[in-house]
Image (cartoon, rainbow, N blue to C red; front, side, top):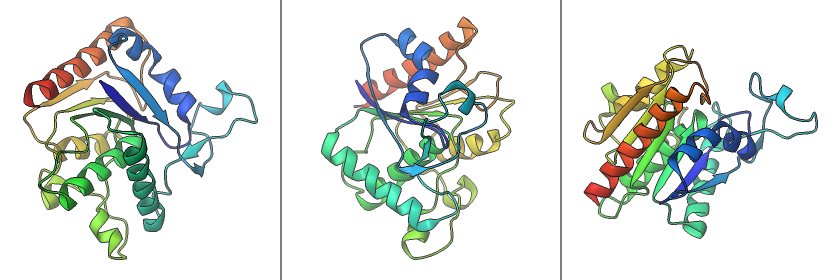
Length: 220
């Protein structure tokens, strides 16, 4: 299976490769992971700058306060998938998860009779997706929520989150937007991160990913 990987705000593709190294090692070489970098220069996320040389560039996929920036990111990612895909699944951290979820929702709402964009999605400390229709109509940025918008993502999803993440509420919003069948939740107990230790946490995350892949393979 081939996975598209989207990093968090204020990092880059190399950072996300490092963050997921232990998890990917545990999953083995049956899966291929392709990391796509954001295009919007952005200050380094907390704790990231110290790990890299001072000249390292960090990025976001979009400015979360700007509708045009979000729409541009959606279009760029859609074009990338059209040119480099198809991908079986997506792995997104924080803003990367929000971008993936928003694009998946847009794809389904515009193409109700075609296949989903991905067969499964792995959301890690995921942020809430945006109302792309409102942005397309020139409206303000609005986060989607199950109370106002219902279930919008229907492929199997894994939600890897941390109970001590200050933004865990966003992860629960994204979780709520996903259908109950095929949903797997793993709480690593940490913060806004992809833990690389202890081993038990890596094994737990890997099992959540495998469970979702099994569900995706079952329903295809």
